Length: 207
Image (cartoon, rainbow, N blue to C red):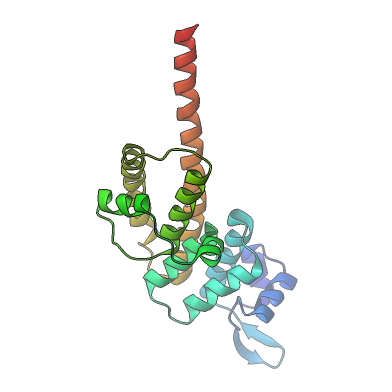
């Protein structure tokens, strides 16, 4: 298909497609003429991914470009998924500020759930949160961490089975990035509803 048809199929303007081509987010089409190229289903899939990362997840062009260069460079799936999580959830800022950070409470969580005892941006982010809460005098007991980690472990098991299923790298990033963003928001909204419901029950009984 030519540029016009690619634009019509994806709903992305020709100007935007040309911009993505210049920025390296979209691979060049197969040249058939000095001023004409043919585009494939891969281009359709890649444009859908770019639009989702921008509009749904809210990533910047530079962030999208970094993820796509990893994907096109053949990065291992685990490394790619870690980069997606780091970017979508903003974990890179924490690691940049604190480096590899360990806390007794964070180590305890890993033991409670028998999670791999390895450094990661997610673990650094948890430990930074624990340090912050301790500095503010907000208690984080072993019982609380056990209960919280048990709940999120069950959620993560469901998430990751869907996230790692696609073989196509565009679909893999799409599922992981959009899934992490939307499921994280869903968990927060469910938690808010649960907190509100418990408060209503408690104060209705008091009244």
